[in-house]
Length: 319
Image 1: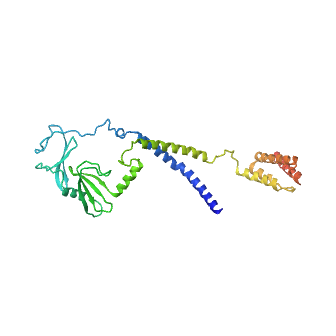
Image 2 (image 1 turned 30 degrees about the horizontal axis):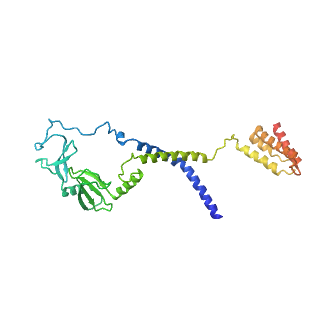
Image 3 (image 1 turned 60 degrees about the vertical axis):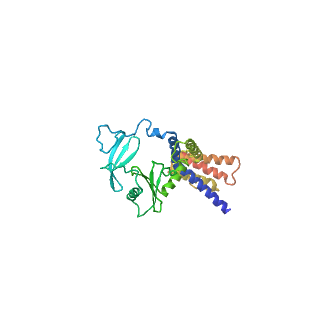
């Protein structure tokens, strides 16, 4: 019995917590579902305005000043001098997306970068606790969802506890990506979150949209059920607290008076409430007493009780 009682109390407590927390948390859940379904419905390229705005760089004009060693200025979009692996280089970018590194003075082609240069870039990029470079590998294909290009690229693995890797563009020497075990865990969870277990970057799948709409319906129906389970608030005419005291006093009188006379319970109530409220209470109890007498439900002393309430009513009515 005690176990059943504990389970019942636990059930009631859980039900109340579920109901009241649903009011606050459920609103945000509903917003998640609605906005998630909307984001799955919209095309990400349209959201970014990629269908109407081009981000392609402009080609340098033909009369632009070029280095003497540049064999062809066709399609060149930028020439920049920067440091790569501790030495100055000139970066040449073209409109087809290709990037080459050259010696600023002689124009000698320096890319693709050798492993030593990639390691030097990786050491310069590292800002964590002191560590070493564990492995260096030139890759030309995608590494799962961890890195998808551009290629060729150098994969540099540090010797830290988080198994951190950096991917360095072999053509430009730029750090393209940094990955760690923490990132890999996040990537896995992200795939579960957007329901893309392979590519983990598709948010416009039909099943994600379907589940978003279904979740919205569940959240809305939950609010409907919650509204039906909420305690109904009975709208009653507000009465002063003294009215409750007076009503209880008259009720006690109806139950406890056994022939006593001279017990004045109505006067205190009259002073607290005023004539109108107490008159209504006294009239109700007087009618109840008369009815009880008529059907002979009162025992000995019924006449005294009737007289008591009749006198109370007369007293109030007179005030």
